[in-house]
Length: 206
Image (cartoon, rainbow, N blue to C red; front, side, top):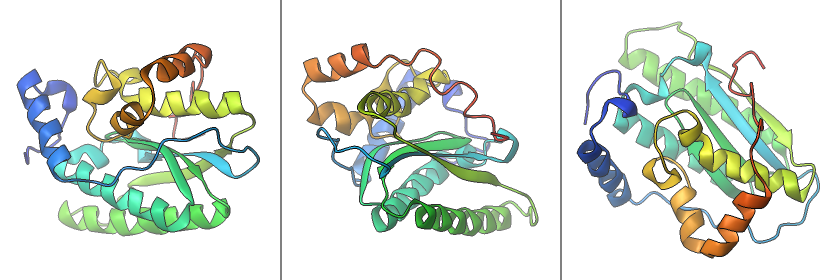
């Protein structure tokens, strides 16, 4: 699983199934799905993109796996809860509860710096800009929260990588669906549709 310039779209169904099984075996920690949270300016949609949307994260599956693991470690240390997350080849999203969101953003900046230094060394590309920046958007209402959760889990489908949430190895959708009553999950999806939600958010200049 070390092909250069990794692209999920180019994998056969058999290769995708193998990769899903491989990642499951590695046992990355999951976070509990939300249970009717209290609202205020504690919950945020965090997103960040690679510079000019290059596929630096998705260079190969092992890099995607390590990046997801280390990103979740940052959230575990500097956010009180992680409700949903998704890592794609050139950006990521997370829905978190963070009492000190500016502190979390600082730690994500440090994480981006460490990651960029390591990857540029591996690829003999010192000085290359890898990440643009991380941004936060506060949840304004219960409707906004659930729409954001749907958006985060739907992102791999939105970008055409997979047909179903659970086909993507690097997100929390499988855990969310496993711990949420199917009728409740369908109700949340039906009552909080995406529409144009998130349009333009993946532009690194926003």
